[in-house]
Image 1 (cartoon, rainbow, N blue to C red):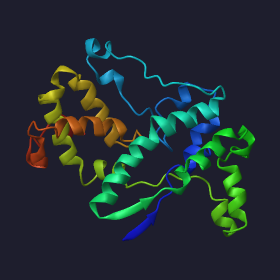
Image 2: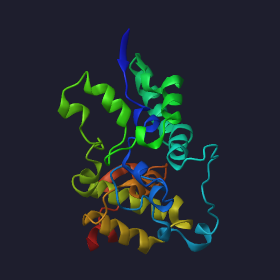
Image 3: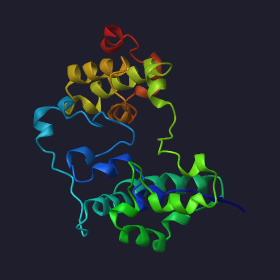
Image 4: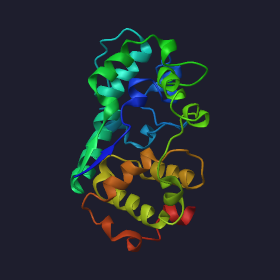
Length: 233
């Protein structure tokens, strides 16, 4: 049996993400995408009557401290449930035992009980874990700033996968999304995204998922490759 250690929970338990620095500003922390300054959704691309059905997402807030409230949201409702769903499925698929030491309830409880300056200091998070690591790791490692680590999906969607993504979006507009999405607004935002104007692809993946939901977009670039969005860009 191969056993792997994973780091899920350290940032959530000890305020490692950049938006924890702005926990008192509700707008700055709503639906965050780590390392992004651009809104993750595009409500203006929804049909007005459909958008009017939306309600504000709310979570229980048993903690009075705004930093702890954000940590609780990420641990209980937002980041950890999503990350662990992926991690559990992938590890089981390959018969690996994946262990999450930072999600031990004692470590999480300790982090939530700490005052703000034990977690956030000098513009960085995870202050106490960094101090512990200082006696174990070389200086460049324990003082390294938080950096989002992800696949270059933004570059792929704008580059080699652009024609495929364009076909998926057009399939979404012609299929399940035609009752929900405003085609010209979607195409305009897609062209804007391809020009490099957005620093996250969260909203694009929503449209791609609609296009891949069984309505024929799975044929990829050969499907309507001459769409208006591709032609106008």
